[in-house]
Image 1: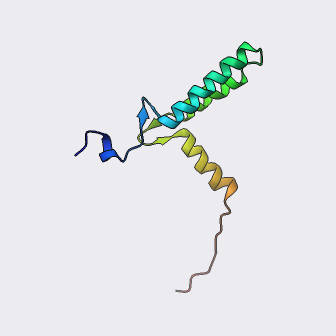
Image 2 (image 1 turned 45 degrees about the horizontal axis):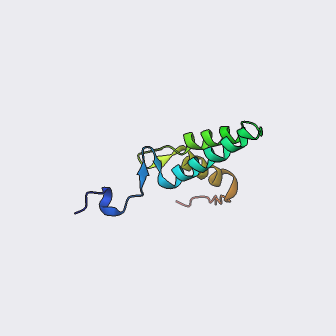
Image 3 (image 1 turned 60 degrees about the vertical axis):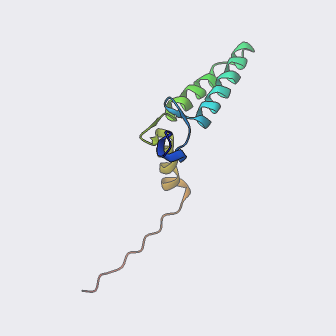
Length: 88
């Protein structure tokens, strides 16, 4: 028996984010600070903060996962329905 959650099968987390998301947020903040120092504007900082907010994980799901599924369902994958008359 392991002390780590789910017997070493759970994804590594740091606070409310997965480790991959923490790395992306850190790199985004670093690049946005460099962009601010060069006078490129606040757009990259805003995008990084937005990603950080959308990737917060609560109970195994994030807003970003929901938005990905919604976009795939509504726009990217074709929905196919068959209408048939019932014969009873």
